[in-house]
Length: 411
Ligand code: C6P
Image (cartoon, rainbow, N blue to C red; front, side, top):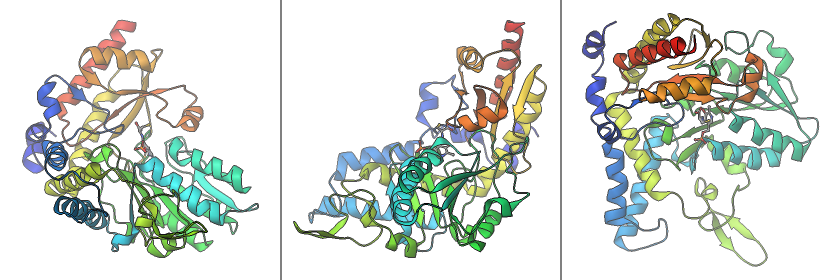
């Protein structure tokens, strides 16, 4: 499909680009590392400056006007997130510093309270380190065992034998929604069904899905859902943990300090209501408010529009990249987000990324914090191009051209 047709059908990515000052300041930048972090629109940057310039103050404490304004803006972001992911109850939304902290919260608080020797935690071989390490640590502490659902050649999960993995001793299943390496979108509803049948809870790592697809946690029926603001055009330092309220209520606090308490005496303390019980200390106020603005921006474009447009980008990129001599693309799932991991025969991924950088093209090279996947693929690293709404077909042409020149250079 040509750029014009896509523009008529969906929207004009070149026009969208004008909303992002970084592209004005780096006119030649082709940014294809969106799975790592995304660029920020002017409206998000303005929201941050506006807070610092006009009503910077701590929240939930001051009774003066600017403090009340800051508190209201912070809590409004909670309402926006609640609606954005279809949570239904604002008490189920805890602001964290990102997906990593959200998962560590669950592992430590829920896991520390509920896991014991003989129990199993079930994760997959496709996980980002953020959804492996916290479970390794808590299993070591509690004596529970960590089990893995294997992956197939095509970068999908091997769910052919669920009884082998989902058992009565499985207490929690933790699974990545969209792989940051393969782009595979996992069948969460099916996994939730298997897990709930054996009485296990489900945590979904939504770091890579939430920015690109419509997510509804109520429909998914997962128990925990984690994601990061910076991967969806929001600021760094803000993320979300969604938890079903009755589960969150029963969990012990993760971090102790100001704000998360009801009463403190020298003998002991009692806790604030959820979600504030899990937001100890001064939170990232500006970032949470800025995140609300990123959600407004996404809503303005429309999530289905984003998904449809990215699907077109993916299709086009896959066709283009397949024509590069010696390319090996990893991950060919039918249900796949706009992420392509690949290697060029006999060329180290870091060399590829360095050469592309000389053409102004930013892609990622490395293990993508998913070393078990690298081991499975029998490689130390891959290249990865990941797309977002401001990318264009012309940029994919530039990527393909850059790769072609790289191959020529090495042969
Ligand atoms: N992946 C990448 O792939 P934080 O750093 O907490 O915002 O997000 C961690 C994280 C968790 N889960 C998945 C699926 C992720 O992809 C990431 C971050 C980045 O380039 C950095 S390795």
